[in-house]
Length: 261
Image (cartoon, rainbow, N blue to C red; front, side, top):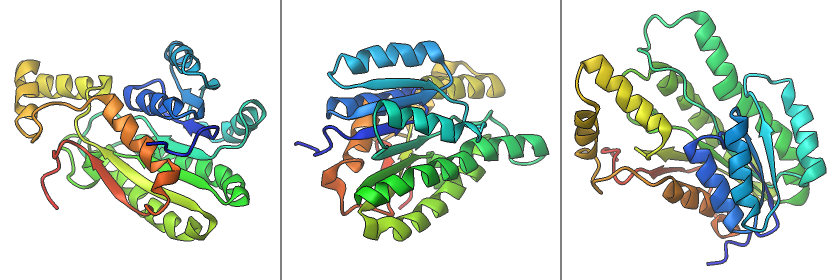
């Protein structure tokens, strides 16, 4: 299927991690030029090489989402190099594991700025160009914890939930301009982050990590962790011309992991 987005420009956050990198590659395979943003310069450069090999342009950007002042400058660089952003993939890193009780005020504030406020301000910067062209795609990656709170991820469960209400509200505000806004929820996708969380649980419960993985697999109907490429391909479809009637929605990419309706 031709997704109808060849020649478009995308900005993908969290691209130095597993999910963001997979999304960037899936979009590039559809002929999309990609600005890839993250904190790990070496990982971004390696990803950029693979994306350029797919025949599209790629611009790596070391971008700290906690620095709101960088938004204007970085967008100007993208627009000069690749053109205006047609597809925005909001994908932020996760906070450290913790219960929700007793979290330090400064941690709440810092994580809110990097995980929530940055997404709002970046989207605000991208929207005028999308409106002018009467076309745009905004896909926000959150966590299964917004539907089924994950133990010991109190900060993540709380802050990512804010993005659900924001995206749904935004979808209604921009729909008439040919712009869609959707949310995607990863289940247990085989990334470094999931490996870290499994290891943290093993340490917390004083059990072997293989037991953690075995117990986790037993909760996933398809019986395995997801491949990041599967996640990337699903996001690419939501970012495509073919998904023009899908907006204001939450999509679980989880192998059936989230058990409730």
